[in-house]
Image 1 (tube, rainbow, N blue to C red):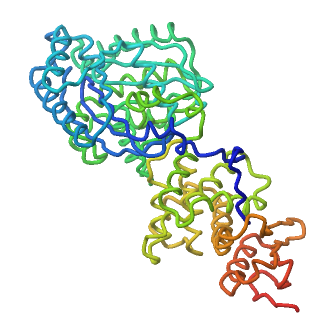
Image 2 (image 1 turned 30 degrees about the vertical axis):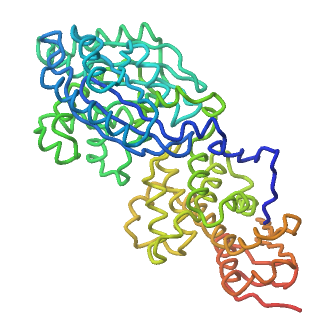
Length: 531
């Protein structure tokens, strides 16, 4: 289990981490500002280039588009709040020594008669240059934000803001047709005729959008604060155990149940249930009406909530294609290992060591195994009594792209078992229920394999020509075989033996060690050394 340097080769099947590359490092800290119809937000991205961390994230609910339908101009109070927010953001960027901020404005500034005047005032006061983007460009950037988290994704991206709603199709990692509309909640609340009038208007517009963009029966990706608020209500209604919005899945029937759940309920009551702000909650009823029509018109296969949108799309815009094509999960794990592990680089060696136990695994499973091996040691600074708990929390709640909720739990459980042999009776029991018995067992085996493999890590300091330890599983014979070369004999002490027996027991196999010392023992029994 010795790492062999490959200075000129790709780290197949991992691929060399791109955050070591100069082009990737140039993206290590990027600030973007989204001037929306309802909110103004600054996000500073930092970290692994392909899966950046949120170094700074601040939002101000300004309501620039609150009176747009009525006056044709930006809301007076909203404009003042937006100017204050942008002035603050400009000062923050200078304090962080950031490159120039990328600032975009969407529907409210785009449609308002005083939009250009507002942009000029911002430039005079702050030095920030706002790019007012058309609706189709807004759709493209939002779709690119989805691709940041789901490389190779396919389906229909729906981004709803305060004063507009955009649709964009994505397939094979590319953005296709895009359309825009005025179906933002701030505009819908001013439609005459009450609920009946809005319903007829929404139906007409959505049918027009479908005619323009064509049938879209794959996944529907929801981008925007109003969609996320609906997802929070859906989670609360279901008693869903993992409060992570990104990659949260809903079905059409679940949305219908949530619509029924909200009907007749006081907005303050819903706010308390779901933890949604007052400003956002006032827009949710209108967004629900739009979502119901989208589902009945497009009939998507399923629905996924994306926390990534236009801001992430702006970052994606700056990436070279070779960086876009990388797996965001693996890149994030690479970065975490290089920054926090005691022995950066051992994750790849550990992956090679445990892989024989998962030969029949699908590509998606092997991807999670890679991620777990890279993360297996990044929480070593935590107190030993809480290390397993910290690992589980980090994996299930970290802001990482490319992970379904069940995959988050699998990854967290494997890392929990890296440090602990038990998982029952913890506060994680509701989350563990997201996995079936087979996946629970696989996560336990992976965790125990990493727990044992970590006992052999000092060999990394030896010459790369030294023999490597290896595992081989014989499922029919129910034998787990460890080949242990002479140079690693001192590492196979009492604790290592116990961990190897525990791994064999999890595999319902007999533990066999080849090479000195020659050991053969039933799983769970203390190995006997034969000279």
